[in-house]
Length: 239
Image 1 (cartoon, rainbow, N blue to C red):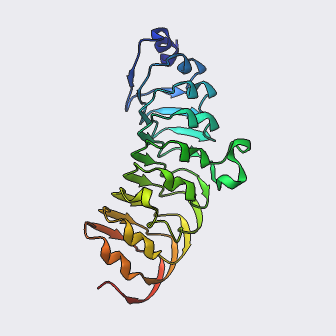
Image 2: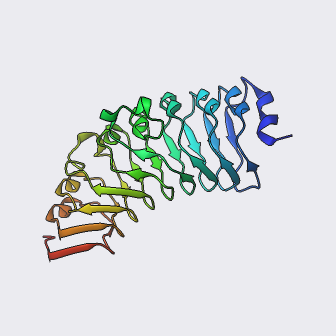
Image 3: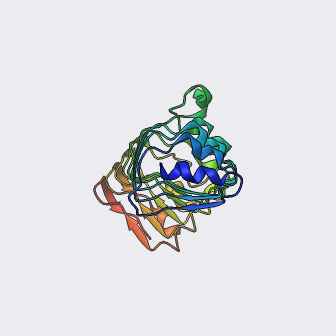
């Protein structure tokens, strides 16, 4: 019997599920949705694959969800907006392929849009690295006022980094920001200098140009700055 099918017999009881670095394979079955009291799921580093079942979104009590290091693909279910309690989300090292689109295009009618993430307002940790996410950065993503860790590296993201990104009051808790290995273009926005709690900033392997903004000197807690493999030019205005 499928491991996750057996677990569904613990309906209304199970709160914590961790099967890490094992040999689980195949799809997550619809029965996972019959465990409504789950608050913690970690299935990272297995051989799971396929789409996430729609029933997955029944797990509205989730606080921690880690599916990293598998072979999931397709779009995230739009019903993930129901994860109102989610604080930790790691979907890295998979093959998810949603598109970042502005909410003005109404993600409710477009299941491939990642605008749904803006509703997960309790998120502290968000890692979507090493997938196939495309499109441009969402201004709505910065409504995540509790976010401290954000990794969108190794995707297919394009366009400029939002000029007002760092000045948005809700993102000033960020400690770690990684946008490397995408196709972002344009200047490094001076507003990043408002992210005064940053200790790590990685923007390498993009198509960023113009000079390095002097506003980065405001980041007094910064320990790691990686801007390599861009087309930056002009003087190094860090004073």
